[in-house]
Image 1 (tube, rainbow, N blue to C red):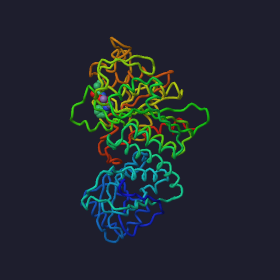
Image 2: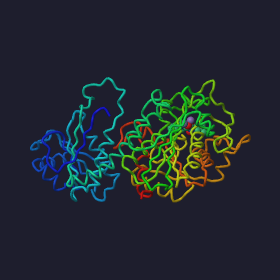
Image 3: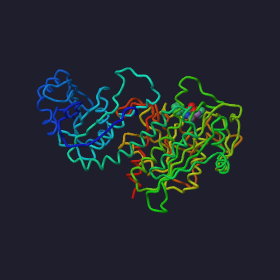
Image 4: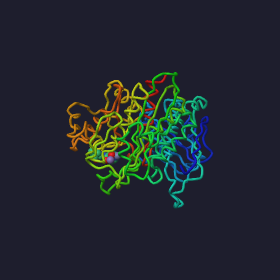
Length: 500
Ligand code: BES
Ligand code: MN
Ligand code: ZN
């Protein structure tokens, strides 16, 4: 973030300067704290609402510059619809909209966490504040030139007015920890591949030690020793060395089996010898969004001191064409001992995940595993950018993920696994091949491949985030390319079902 954002909470008081943001319902009703604060301008607001046909519909806004009677330079009224039964994702959205309405020049803003039904509860006000911070994120560290009107102020102070400032501080601390993980994931996804290659990614995970995460980096000799030949095969055409990072957070009972998260970390995916077309290839710097999410999640769990044992494993490689690159037709033996015929070197993510997921189950015997990967274009064809594709060998885990998705707005849609699809990856020469050979059901055959590497009958879910990990449409709570998708979803899964 270029601008430093200072967020604070205070009791309700009309601001002496800057922007004032308030909420109303679809009958243009305000909470009592709000009504009191804007009383001198209430006639003006009613007139403006009429003139602009502003009715308080959810997400709609009304803006007044230099409103007579108020000390604020600007009044923003945001519609909260019925303003009843607002859930976390609704409040995040309202916070995001509030942030989005601050003019670039504004250095001070006051947001009234107040609704017609009464002042927002501590948890609600904290959700609102979380949305503000998520929206404020921008990845602009490589912008050296800016027009004057594009320049944000050196510092922005946002004051959220609440009724119980002490309680809100505690509720917000948790969300601040989660946001830290989301923004870390976004930074990693946005970073270009000349800067963020496997070794550098691994180096950045060391920052998690500060929060109490144990970080272990496996280098090439270690990976060779483990027999991760499928992963190593993907990276062998790159000048950059592959790495696997193991992150452990032990906030639960000693000896309690951990929950496990595994991420695809292809720092750049050219396709390898089965090279991709030039158009849009730059997006493949984001082919490590799964690994970014796992890293951000581990940071979030540790920062909020989650009462759970969790492990995060990421497979970091760069998929490049080169004299030493893997060829179509090559056969590799994965850590599981199974042999794989490489049909297409662009189906590399499953090769990376196969080894890491096998290792995760064998070493940690987790309660369950969730892997995240920008795995297939086919899942984007199926689901677009709204839902991530979910594949699971366990109904309970799938159900819990779906619920956490609805609660957070990071939604997942279950897709099938079946023996008929599994057969499609049988190979003439080896135990399996790395594509189904046809584009039909491409996300499913990819998931079947990963399932063949799930050891110990571990409950497992695979999230294909090719559509949600980056370039997610400009949303109310994210304007940057990297979305940090999945951190809030998985934090919620842990919190609701696995924390003691
Ligand atoms: N990283 C890509 C998938 C991808 C595509 C992610 C677009 C995000 C946006 C993956 O490694 C890939 O290349 N998949 C191929 C698989 C095919 C060769 C079987 C695909 O989807 O075309
Ligand atoms: Mn690929
Ligand atoms: Zn890829």
